[in-house]
Amino acid sequence: MDVLYFAWVRERIGIPKETLTTEAKTVKDLVEELKLREERYVVAFSDLSALRVAVDQELTDFDAALDGVREVAFFPPMTGG
Image 1 (cartoon, rainbow, N blue to C red):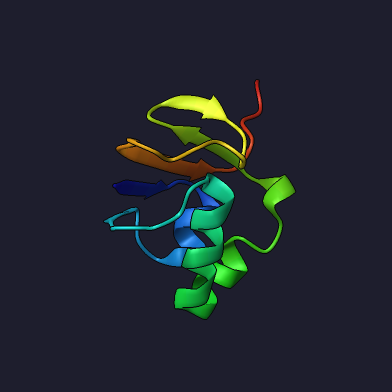
Image 2 (cartoon, one colour):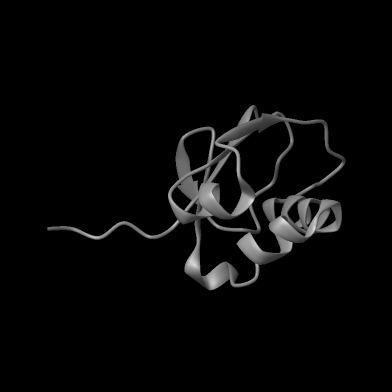
C-alpha cells in the first residue's frame, strides 16, 4: 500500500510517500507499526488528535479497516480562508 504524508507530517518523517507491506488491520494499527520503525514516526504520530486520515482518498477515522486498501494519507486538519 502507498502511505502519503502531507504538510508538517511530511516534514517530521522526511519523505512524502512510501510503499509498504503491512499486517495492520486498521489505520491505528498502521500508525503503531510505523511508530516502531524509527523515532521520526513517533514524533510525527505523537498526537493523533492533530491529524486527519484518508483511506483511498476518502476522509475517515483511525479505526477504519485497511483490508484491500491501496492508499492511506496523513495530514493536519485543513483550515479555510
